Amino acid sequence: MKASFSEKEINPLHSIEQWEDDVLLRYPEANTKAKEEFRNYEDPARDTVKEFYRLNHTHQSYDFVMEKKNEFLQFNRKEMPVWNAMEYLNTLVDDSDPDIELDQLQHLLQTGEAIRRDGHPDWFVLTGFIHDMGKVLCLFGEPQWAVVGDTFPVGCKFSDKVVYPEYFAFNSDVSNEQYNTKYGIYSHGCGLRNVNMSWGHDEYLYQITKDYLPEPALYMIRYHSFYAQHRENAYDHLLDDHDREMFEWVKKFNPYDLYSKNPLPPNVKELKPYYEELIAKYLPAAVKL
Image (cartoon, rainbow, N blue to C red):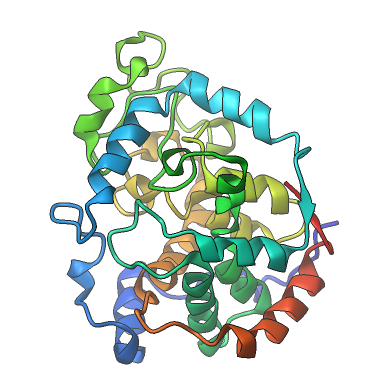
């Protein structure tokens, strides 16, 4: 059963612009790059990035998303403690990320610790720590282009605000009259709950945690990779008023995810007891994958 939370606990605080600048000022030792150097897709530091998005944009069609939802949302593959799932991420370096080559567990600890240092509620800290846990999809042999990367709606026209939009030319939905218009199968202001996003770790983890965390945390998990909207407002026509309210939380979370990336790894052994206690407070002893 989902826990109850006071209005004070889930009330958004600062604007995204103020918050990004503030995070960078408070943690200068953790950031050797200027803010504008993050998410540099014009000249990514790692040569896997462009090839990743070519594959991602080619294959993430509406039919593909429906197939993957049917395949994975039965949660009949494996059951394991959350910390074990997090430790699996030690084997994964995200091919879509141009900013860092640390394994995922270290990035997630950095995110959680940045949120904790700022005195936010513990459910927010936990969200920072687990937000990429859905990348355990790679456990089941899924290629990274079907697990990570920026997300976007399928079933309607792809926005040119999505990173590397030129690669959508190879997607079969581009020639499908049902899917290649502004609204496609959706309607104005239909709400994101009615919109199918490209498949990956965001939606997967949302479905795993939706009965346990407060709604702002679930929006952070489900849409933290939806940069075309929370940075560019490219899909405003599909959002309803509730989405806009909740997206203030997504925008608040994003700087922690992005700017806490630090080439210096955190002390996993030292931090593990705190995060295991936090996991036990909100999530079941084992999750079904």
